[in-house]
Image (tube, rainbow, N blue to C red; front, side, top):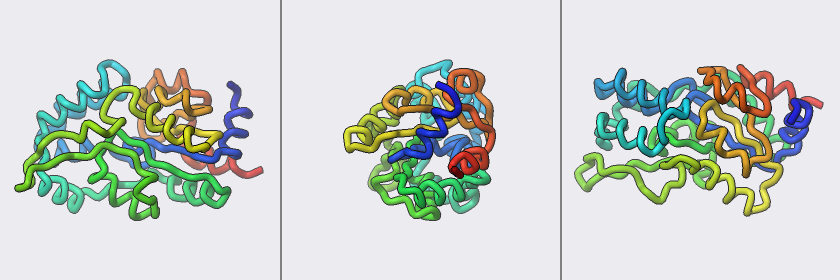
Length: 223
């Protein structure tokens, strides 16, 4: 698929789906949470392996959470101390896509609780955010991840996008930095790799179009 075809799909898209960590946001939320809990280096190494495709996402997720053991209070305190940072140009691109009539979704292997501030800031409805949910006991202790969330496992983003396509949302575009995003084409009509935060070679090499900033996509919408 050439760049012109990808741009045409982006311009005509009924739905555009963005990864969150290292795409919509400039950080990996789970790494921020890990650093807050004092296990940053160990978890960051597991994150890099997962995003690069070296291990199954679900295995890396379980290993990271076993190290972090985040309580409800930990999550709240982490967000207060380190609020998510939007990647430059993301808010503008979302506004431009919405102005063209596209529905914009956040599709993440991260956690709803960590993404909530970004979703609120950019007025995403709850049904336009598909992410993992941390579970807690009655007293707020960590109790795992909701297994019903499709993004808790490898191939989960493809499942999420298949649900959008079943609703008639096509053309459908996926944008992200990791292998789990690449896996979502198909059902996405095209995959735009994003390297504005981190460049993952497999994503750069296999994306239908690879960009290093959201300004490239905003510029492509003109015309």
